[in-house]
Length: 295
Image 1 (cartoon, rainbow, N blue to C red):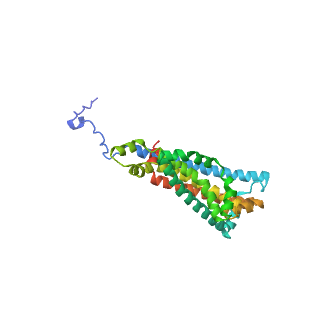
Image 2: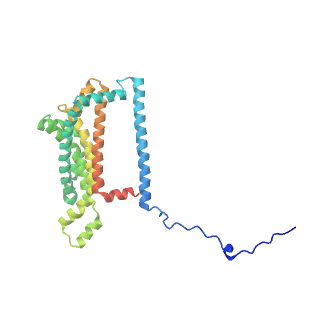
Image 3: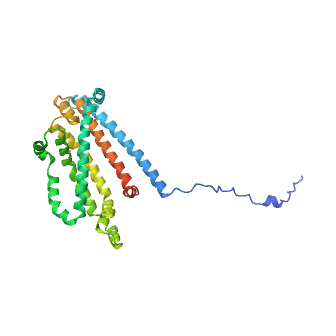
């Protein structure tokens, strides 16, 4: 029986196997900003999904309530949609929307300009703010409907009076937010400006007012939402026109599908106005939004 003689291993055979070369272009770990952006994207998808689910639940609830209580209590969503198409097709909704937008636009413009101007004065001058603070609070706490008879006597029943009603409803949230923002401006920035010899007027317009911009924009957003409500109240209580007039006409005839069609337009209008002001806030107060998103 022959035995195989093992051949001696050469130096090349005795070498250890080389390790696989590592990829020098391996992806870098994500930064904190990228992680935060991915988290916000996931949250956005989740929020949109929940909102769509809530809309579906609301539609299903309308169908169920209609089946139980009848169309006088709750119209069917498809009937509301059909009525909306008819009102947009014959121009009824477009005419009412145009009339309401005129009142909303003029009232918001008047309340924004006057509210910001007076708020800057009351917030920038401490003594002036203390003098007028009780009067502002008294007017703000009084229901706007209490002034409607007086407004009718002074301005009549038409567009001018409606604009005044909207202004009276929206001016005080804008004024109060502006005054609070200016009065509570960053004290460190003010002291730094004083240390560099900045005068009072320069401190006021270069530090205090810009620092109050987030509060001003928040007041504008609240005021815009109130303007929509004030417009409907004015159109219901005075010469009926616009979307408020359509609401009154449909409600008096118990045409609930027509009524809900107008309500949906009002809801979309208020949402769009608020969204536009939100975009303005993100544009002009990016530092505040960045801090909020990083939480």
